[in-house]
Amino acid sequence: MKYSLIPALFLVLASGKTLAQQEYQVVTVGFYNVENLFTPQDEVDVIVVEDMIRGDRSSTLVLPKTSELEEKMRSQEYYSLSSSNWSEIPYDTIYRDTKDSDNTPDGDRKYDEAVYRDKLDKLGYALGQMKTDMAPDGPAIIGIAEIENREVLEDLAEVISSETRHYGVVHYDCLYSRGVDVGFLYDSTLFTPISSQSVYVPLDRHETKDKGRVLTRDILVVEGDLLGERVHILVNHWPSRSGGQARSNRLRVGAAEVCRKVVDEILEGDSAAKIIIMGDLNDDPVDESVVDALGTTGDRDAVVDLYNPWVDDYKNGRGTLAYGGSWNLFDQIIVSKSFIEDDTKGWMFYKEARTFDAQMLVQEGTYKGGPFRSFAWNNYIGGYSDHLPVMIYLVRPMK
Image (tube, rainbow, N blue to C red; front, side, top):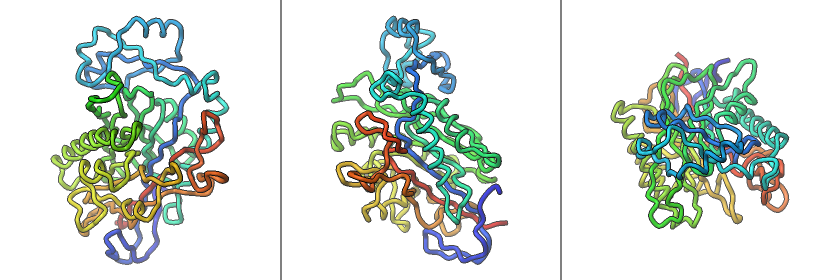
């Protein structure tokens, strides 16, 4: 089956509007921060400068670290690798450490092939379980955060694929100094990519000690065909709250402003474009970056162009990660107004957003109820992630 069907019934949308009794197609859209999914090798990014000048980041190679590559790294000056200075770099190729030595057999986490495969299998199982009676086939599209490279995303896609469902990947190496990217998985029986790009997020480094570092991940923008209808997906992972929420706030506001610019460019081309923004925003649905810089609201009647269905969940104490005994709802999926308008044609946002908090994903014992994470104090404890996955449903009448 290429999609799920809701049998003949009266369907209630987020607006409260009840639709006529008929059959509906249903697809699930998901997002999951998978908590540092690395290969167990210490690796080096091999970046072709000419390709980067052209804006092609898909050609970046990742190779196991060797003494020869280490020597090449030491022979080069350090570059911040922002999108504005590629033409000024006096090398044909840049060799860059991906900062992943902790995630190796000899590293602090003792991260070997067995750990990698166990974590991969658990994540695959979790993603495969993101289904309900209404949508029993699992997600059509999934945004992913905290992956090392294309290889791990392809491994994850292989784990969740089956005889009837094959997941494809979209990935670009970003230049974030910690060596983790965002990525995109799609069920190729439901979704066909048309175009994609990796949008660099320039941030002001004033008052930071890390003036040479790239402080966040790119925004992955994918345009594609979802069972005959054009949609745009923006996968985000905004800067963390390292150094404190207040001090780091401007970095997330900066990332949100870049995301907003991408949204505006899409809407300029098509004011009715269907846009899905997803990601680990490292801020809650009511924070400045999400509300003011990105321009969202949880009040359907007040939506200008972006609707955030997570506001009520957050105000009711629900979240996707727990720290110090309290919940935050950093992982969100936001939709454009075109998904919720009463005269919406095609895919519509259905009723509510969901945190996928199946029992296997939450901890027992001291931290009971919080996400069952993979690592605690650098020890692998066999969990899934320090974040819970999130999902929404899209529906449309059968023709």
